[in-house]
Length: 278
Length: 278
DNA sequence: TGATATACTTGACCGCGATCAACGAGTAAG
DNA sequence: CTTACTCGTTGATCGCGGTCAAGTATATCA
Image (tube, rainbow over all chains, first blue to last red; front, top):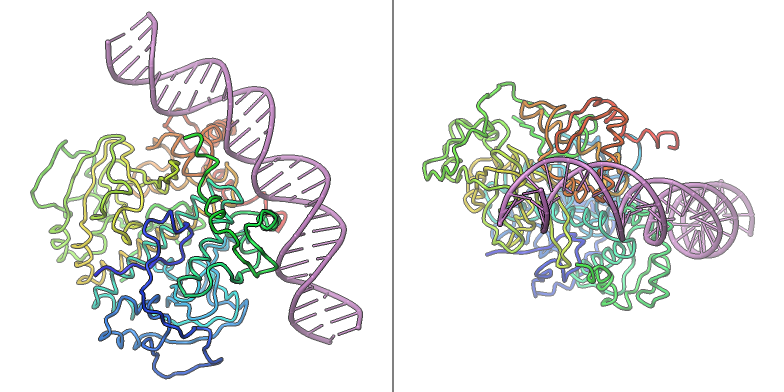
């Protein structure tokens, strides 16, 4: 019983061998429909969560789901721009994004920032922090965002009892490493156009996973964060966006993006320019 | 009882808060002294291994060490340049470096390579592969290298029973993520000189951890791999090495390196050029 | 309605580092 | 010894993308 769930990947689906497999049961209820300020101290209900096939419950038997619900604190709401934790916050919990989106970044003592990831509903934040007393990065809500909190001590205890869950944790962390390697690859080998194309495709496939439009979505993050994440200047990001637009590959107005020619985007990411050489 | 072990980090010690803590018992037996072709089907002896305070045994009680020894296949020897696994090899095991060193890299379908890490004695390879059917990268011995093999199915089973070991696995994987983030940061923000200084300091601290000279060592990898890892051209690496040499910061002849002025190297990594601005 | 940010775009310039090319040095095989 | 190879160094040129600068939305708030 091997469950696969690709979290937060940058690699275009075609490259990442075996593109994201979706459980073919369409849960139709959208996560966004959560009533505001649902500060319910009531018991969490992973059972009813529309993301249960993406999030941690994915790896938990129906019978054991209750044990996961016992440890999770559900539904904390963060406003746009709000800090969730930073490098000086004592590490206590991992967070699953329920709705909205967040960014994580490392901030050096020199003051400059490196965005290390964007996290969208169903994805788990904080896996990079499981080796220290404080969080290894800073997390900020990119929009109004709802998070489920998993205290790590409880979580570790539970994974010790549920082999499937433990396996899934290894799985997720391993994938986080792979994503980061992909990012490194992107940063060291690829042009500005290739990087941006890769990001757009990554976002696209992550929207698709949530059964939303894969070609028509709005970017959760400002150009600024895109630039930082991809190791570019904001101006360059802007230029590439307009270049893509002029080529008819995308249509972008502000954060609203429409992918007009996904194939073309994929062509950009694969190194067709370099193919002649090797 | 929290054990800390920094594996394979790129961040200069001063940045990485709380520099690597060493268990103050100096085990003097060198790992290199392993007789060639010791294909011993005999039981492994983590007890006697000089790296037991760096490697997985670090997180296992004296009493339980035997259970770890039960699952490990010890002492496989690989020659310089020899493949250990690649992206098409079915994922089966993680490997601990016993002596020598290896590099891991991703190779795209386009044929170009991105070196994702160098692994030295006491460090665990394969953590990025725990989410797929095959390894996520390609591993190659940089020199004559001896590895201990941990079959993952057995390992997962064991970590389910030994909470300390499970915790340590999370710890290591988390650190792998952090390292990769540090690399991404380096690649997207830092100049050639800063990247190379960071690598030299990283290697230095990893040699120190093994109680070897932190200022006088020989690079396990060719310039080629350094360049690839740091997202630079070989020529640039060469130029920076000679520049550092002319500045009296290092002395390098071939792979033999001597760090003459560690402080200066640290100065290079911190962004003193940028300090005026922010 | 205005004012003050913040986000995004576009243009002009220039520097770091890639690229191309040649060369030196060490090693192995004949 | 030559030949062929890999590895490392150094020089000359050029282009991508960073930087600086100005201008244009789009917000938020008094």
